[in-house]
Length: 313
Image (cartoon, rainbow, N blue to C red; front, side, top):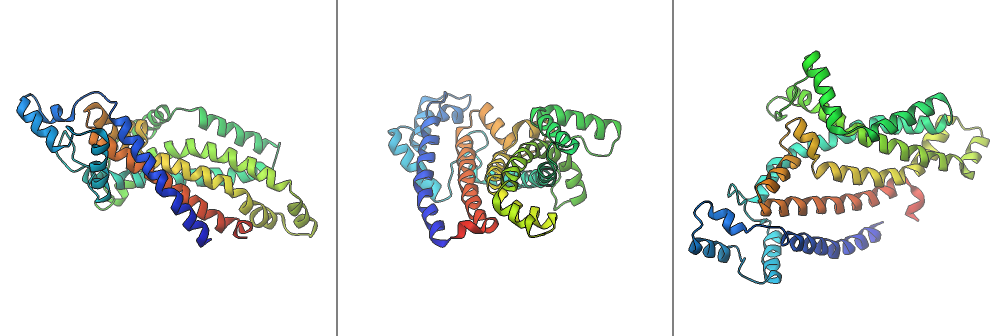
């Protein structure tokens, strides 16, 4: 396992380098001059020239990339053209909000998807199975922003149980924080649960049809032991992969959901940066997001060894 882990780490390095080159290169195609944006209304040519020199914009693109990567390796992602605040500081302000929302959403998704997917596979072609598949199809088809608005109308406007929008830090008031996050977490988790449920059901059906499961049943083992111990652990491999990718999507910022519930996370940060042509922030957020995706895939590969003993050999 350790050798496999080292091999994966070695392959991650060129992947991260290629991703960083792609991010920086595509950024150069966007319209607008960061120096002119920083200069503001006073479009003084001398000031713009000084800013371009300070930001290394007067140098060839490969040299600019070298300076940018040197800063990234030192934890310097540049400064926001709009506020002058370091990009890394901005990201660290928004990251806890998005991390909490992502993990709450994934928890909701797992609570819904795993039991329903397992039961649907075990009770194949029954009323329970058909109901679970209808739920999955509706969850995939339902737009997040529409579901969010409906939940606000029901639980905030009509019943008054939950706040309609906003965010409160858990360190200030944990109860108010959970009340504000439960609806957006359910909105995001519902869509992911539908996808995970379908994959869990499909994977479980394949495993339940294998010879070793039939042998376990022939030995007289209880159905619960056969399903949980023998079938589920081997069926979780594709679910883990999909779950890691979905978690990466959540950590990159659920733009529409954060806008509907006015949550100051990655989604709102990237939208504001794009509208304000704050390219340093866009670069930093995309780089962090891409790195998160890659690291989550590595963690998913490590999880295979925990849930599927056959891979250890």
